[in-house]
Length: 254
Image 1 (cartoon, rainbow, N blue to C red):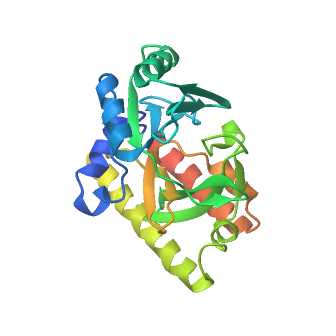
Image 2: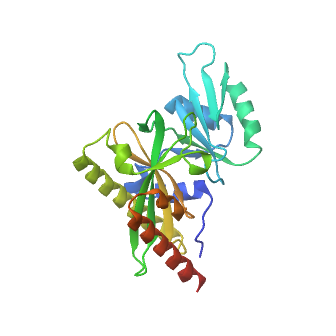
């Protein structure tokens, strides 16, 4: 019974098999060759390139094609480094060196909502309860460090209450509806993953919101960090998350 699934492509395929989830999953493809990336760039203009096996946002690059830029229409950002190119093939060869022969995915780029001009996403924690029911136990916002393309705490991301991040975009009533939708998504993803992997008992969903307030499931983590919830003022949330985490560890060790 697998409870840790590190392959991002495998997890994307599981979610894409469910019609009600597929519309919330950005189009994602394994990079077979330069044509995969070129085709995705031509459709979306901005994409993310991610290692199939990777953690903490390491190795994630944002790649863009701006046809109005006559000199350097192609560019990518990896960490704090931005590289610009006159030609797609030149950029691809440079990016390929950074990939070091590892397997990578290309994912439709979602233009995320921002807080103080920095992208943010939302981590939704879903855990098995002692009664073996899936529960959404916590949500927290992750704001990218200024100048970075990933929101992960290990890459300098800041943790913030989601109400603070959403208040510029929606009323408190609209927030309640939106949070309810995130909970539904979390529970549906948990059910879909559990159908496939019976050992899974906790998940961390990374959800980006676009300007139309549509929540996109960027990634599903099977080893989510419970300690990020310590940053919330409401200590009951961390207390619940850690209680379920300890229970699931004990349950799995039997």
